[in-house]
Length: 304
Image (cartoon, rainbow, N blue to C red; front, side):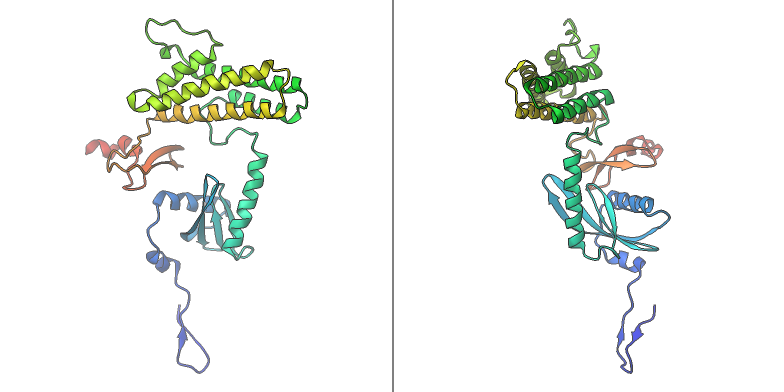
């Protein structure tokens, strides 16, 4: 684009820098983050193609990191705020600071509304287990007498039993040892912890899983029989069960997938889960050197 001349003056105001040229001036950003934002915008914007994108800011909301991106397409320009991800047209939201504040407000309302819903990212445990937890949380919202709070304790108890039944297997029982009864939550949860957190390096994790299981089981059983139970007691039980399910779910995925703590190529700790649409699954990705565990399965990897 040619420079614009201003009146009779010989001075010229440069035209806007092209997206292709602008890209060369932006500091390198993690490729997997760029890919995620690009795919998200092109899906949500319907037919538009991303021509340029760059990360501008990072905000922290409690334990959630919100990244702000400036994204240009062949038709429009957007702010994209993550966690949860949403896009805002810069024609309607010209100020990034205002957009981030708006996004945080919406996020807080959504978090409050979903506080008694199963986490969307938790796919390791069966739907029936999380549904039992949701039923306990819904019952707590409606309970107003001790009997109602006791019923919440019973539902939490059944949720924990459903959890060990869905995850446990006879392979977890040490040779020569008799398998616990199907409803023995404490014993089965201990065997599950021994399986998914093995070795000396996982001793503290294993101990934490077992201690959490025992204390949570004691809490929900106490609530089930407490004739003086109040709403706070029900809230404690529901939240304790949610924490247990989420923690065991994460540990199970880590155990089954074999996610490394450090990159086997460069020893960096910056190993993250990266979703690959073409594979319809997550892979382990090192943000430091670009290594992925998918590299180990690729045909080219076998030739090296």
